[in-house]
View 1: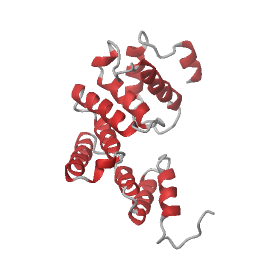
View 2: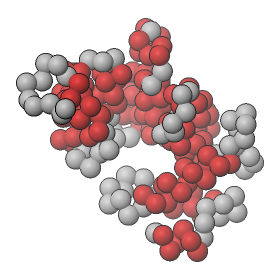
View 3: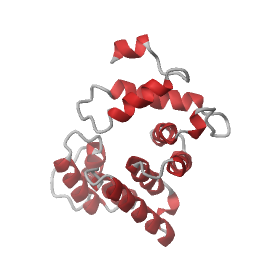
View 4: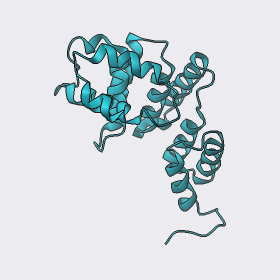
Length: 193
């Protein structure tokens, strides 16, 4: 992958080819394509202007907005939840049938302070249901675990992360599970000091 990326870096010109490759690699659990995914999200982030917009032709590409949303969601910025929400909404507006954009919109909503309002809870559940409808095999247990973690419901977060980890051991949400276990005062096991 490193050789391919050095020979053909992701750019506006090479984006159509990379777009096809990346879409073909969705669901690849081998981690052999991770470098390409990281490069694509970094590229989209580098293309975003000060107003949060992407340039033509990316502005009309729902997958490009999805990748930008991923980059923003994993950034260190304090408003990452709201910023990624805007990108995922743009992605869905351009391609309402992309399940992962719906799932990630739910996650970005969970990252925000108003996630507990009835309207937000309803929207989160709607987005998770839409993701499941569009891609029935998409693993969504960790979305609920993250919600429990965000609510500081550590017993529920621990249980849901354990279930998510059992379903998908390579899932990076194992970090969330560890946080839930260590933070769960009802957990009888030993604690990190």
